[in-house]
Structure formats: C-alpha cells, structure tokens
Image (cartoon, rainbow, N blue to C red; front, side, top):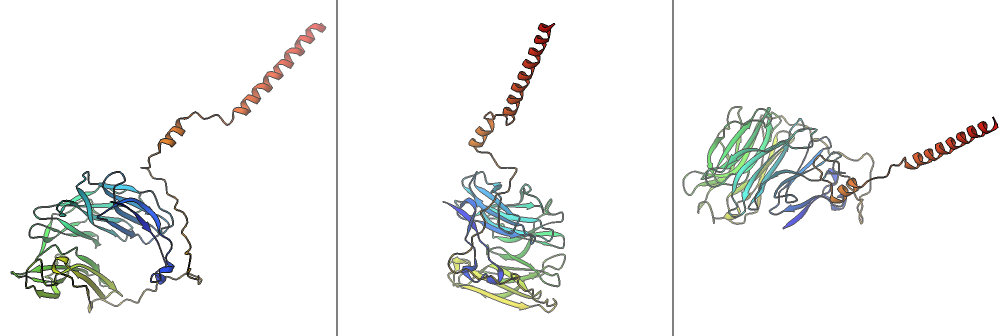
Length: 377
C-alpha cells in the first residue's frame, strides 16, 4: 500500500481548536505501511521529517523546511533496505542543543515481524544531506528492536532490545555519533515492552522509564524507573508492579509497555504507558512524581500572536504553495533533458544580422565613391 505524508500547523495556544489548524500540505510522497514518520525541530525555524517510503526503493526518506513549515524541499532518500522483505520500523528522531538531528531505527522482517538490525544516522546543523547510516546492533537471537536516543553531557545514549529472552542494552558515543562503545546489558529485566523513555530534569539528572518483567515464573510485570549516576544506571524501582497469574502472553490485562515521560517545570515528571496487547485490553495509564532534589522552574508561557487574529470558522487560511528548495540529488526529467539538448537560437542574432547588412551597405557606398572619383580624373 502507498500513502502520502501531510503537514499542518497551528499556534500552540490554539492547538486544541480544530479550526485553528491550516489545511494539510502534502510534503512526502509514496509513504508505505506499516508506516513510520517523525517530525523534529531544531528550535530555530528548521523542521525535519523522516518517513518510510518507496519512491526509489523501500527505505527512509527525509524532507526539510527552513521557514517553520511554510515551504519544503523535495524528499531525498536517507537509507534503503535493498529488500522487498525488509522495512524500516521503530523510528526515533532527536535534536540536540547544537541543532544536530539524530535518528535511530530498526530494520524489520515483514514475514516474522521481528527486528534484525538497528541503525543510526546524523544530520549536522546547517547541512542538507545526512551522514551515512551506522550499524549499531544486529539480532543475536530473537529480535533487536525499539531504540531510544538522547544527547546527555556530551555523550549520545542509545537504549534498545536484543538477545533472547529480550533484554535492554546500551551503546554510547562520545564524538557525536562517529564511533560507539561496546554494547552493555543494563538490567535483569526482560521482555520486548516498547522503547525506553529518556528525560532530563532541572538538576541535570538523566531518568529512564521502561516497561518489563523480572523474577521467577510467573514474573513480576511493571513500569520501572532508573537514574544515571554518571557511571551506570541505578537499580530500577517499580512505579507499578504486579505478579502475573499467567506469565508473558495471553494474560490478565496487566503488562505495562511503551513508556512516554515528560518533565514539567523542571522537577515534575509525568509518565504514561499502555498494556502489551497480548495481555488483554487495559487502557492508558499514567503516574507522576515531584522530585525533591530538582529545583522548580517558572512556567514558560506559550507564544501568542502580537495582535489578535480571529480564528476562521469555515474556510481556514491556506498555507502558501510549497516552493521546493533545490537539492543536489534532484534528477531532471526527460522533458528537461530534451529541452536542454535542443539547439537554442542566439538572442543577439537579429542584432548581428542587422549590423552585417549595415556594414555591407556602407562598403558599397565607399566603393562607388572611389569609382566615381577615378572616372572624374
């Protein structure tokens, strides 16, 4: 199946009002399903979208805007899978303080649904083309999957699943993603319960939240929290935990998975999660805590327009038509090539012709005058 990637925007203060959003703009073409797409901003007007597509082959494609989404470049390939049976999945993007964009993703097997490799790529601030992808991990047993990434204290952290039973591993880079240290297994917890969520509080402490199980059968299933102490991750503490009646799959609706954490005012962390679908439906859950060792920061007001603008109720104001920026990989069409090869008349031709006729006419007059003078003699 094929689809397209669309983009729209609204002021943050009006984001809850559906009529405040501008009409969707088609920016990415021939996206594929299962779909992967991620939007990231450098905070300075540059937006980058990475998505799975098949314009020139199955893989990841990238689009950029330098004016907060008003205009977009043409899609460019970032990485191909070179196989009809391999697709990108579990895509994550991240923007660091220097404006560099980082991406991690899994290459999955369509037949089994399991990940076989994890890759990393970087787009440097001010650049158009991504650096060549780097292989971070290959499957060693069951699957390798669900990588998360963060830039912390001048080091890149990538947390992912691998091995059998699936466990959490980490790799770090201290040179901006050029080289990586050896993989390190983090905890005794097992299970492929989605990516870890990484956040930093106002005291510059790095936190990790993740869903997993631990202990003898039936294992203790829960949502866990750990803190980086500068050298290693501390022993995880349970936010919520429960011993499952039936271990692993087909259970009783309790298997916390896919954590997502955010920090508010520097010292309040909110984490949400769902239940592994194999355990049965159980809705969306959340928990929060106020940190004693992190200072509370004043709230940052959302930006507002300088003058009040009525919100359209019937016909939203459309965005300007996108003007693709020229890219080094843009391939000319056959029509453009034919036009380029067609001989083009010289725009100065009429002037040259006119000048030549005038010159000949003058020479004829001069020659006639000389003949006349000779006759008179």
